[in-house]
Length: 229
Image 1 (cartoon, rainbow, N blue to C red):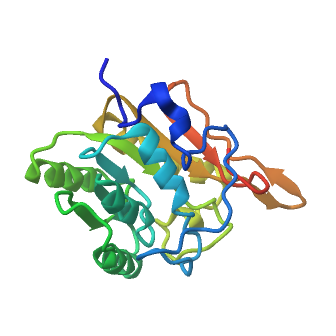
Image 2 (spheres, one colour):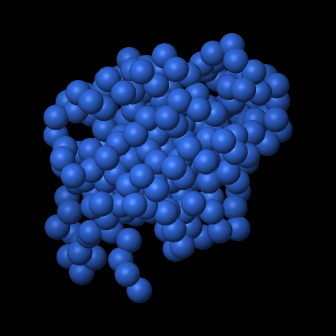
Image 3 (cartoon, rainbow, N blue to C red):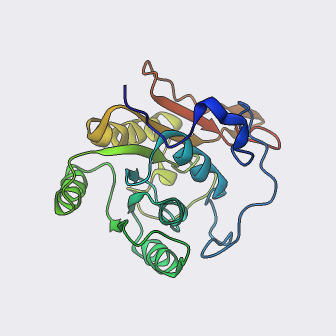
């Protein structure tokens, strides 16, 4: 069976910067290069960095269906992975393009593409297929999804924005549409990671109930105190 990463698992202790515990304790966010912490809702760059080093190899293609300000694609450039990011809001996508282009620590052989589109729509999937075809690819080797945590942060007033879903049930339906839209694009025996948190409303915790019967889906809960699980 072919490896899904470039790590030497016989000498895993030599990787001092790869977290091997199930609870990831991450201190200060990485603000080097093009990374910024000013966009509300963006996750710390260490999360996609850790995920991609575990579940991809150099030259693989990573798809981010909720790109935001471009964190995943910046890490793709640094790690020598090709990246496609989808962002619903044009003004946010423009920020992502600028920051990805500003990143100077990268492998010149990789490609990064920012697509302004709705990840729930079939036409968006078709556009991703076209991008892959233009680079001689048919599939992606890793999918990362960092959706809004329902309505904790309102990113826009658009009805197609998941942060405006009327209920948790509606939110999960829309999020499921995104998963269904791209799941068969994932190469066999590769991984999809969901980075999401719970929310506190009406004096109670509402758990991020994203469950799966597939062993290749990883759920990262960002609401664990002082770390990620």
